[in-house]
Amino acid sequence: MIGIVDYGAGNLRSVQKALEAIGERACVSGDPAELDGCEKLILPGVGSFGAGMLELSARELDGYVRKRVRDTKVLGICLGMQFLLEKSYEDGEFAGLGLIPGRVIRFASGKIPQIGWNQVFDLRTRLFEGIDEGTCFYFVHSYRADCADEYVCAKTEYGVVYPSAVCRNNVFGVQFHPEKSGAAGLRLLKNFCAL
Image 1: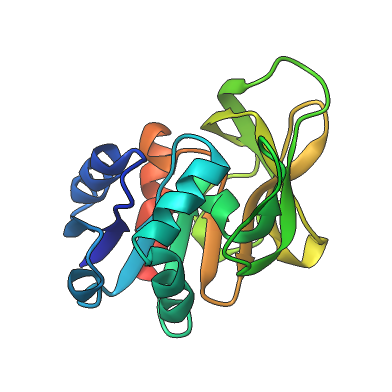
Image 2 (image 1 turned 135 degrees about the vertical axis):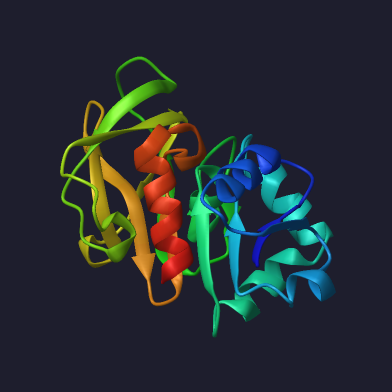
């Protein structure tokens, strides 16, 4: 069973449907007791960093996720990936979960937000097993990760080359939406479930 963390925001149902499409059972819940029964967790996200972190904190899911990553693999998607970092400068400065050293900053140039398909390259983790260099995934975001190369497991270029996937120990994050990225996105989710 894969647990999809429900903190009142995010593309929960589309992630659940994508998991079901690859034959995985998925549970959408904000109840730690229910999530405790899940083998892996997915932290989805759509919206602003500050508001999302406030919701996570208000529901005490921030501490729960920090505790679970000790022995459970966690995948952050889009805003959920940004939550994994130490802080964000979206509409002020807000603390993240601090699971991966780094920060979230706004794109400095180009059409913002980035919306649409873009290539992902320099693939360095089993999340991308069976996925070719340069495969396109679907993005919607105005802010991006900024972290040391040792935590980067894929990159994308949009005015600047930036981390489009990050990882550290049991923690994985992708800036794009695998649930909206067709066959490649489903393959990535299947790879995560198999880790």
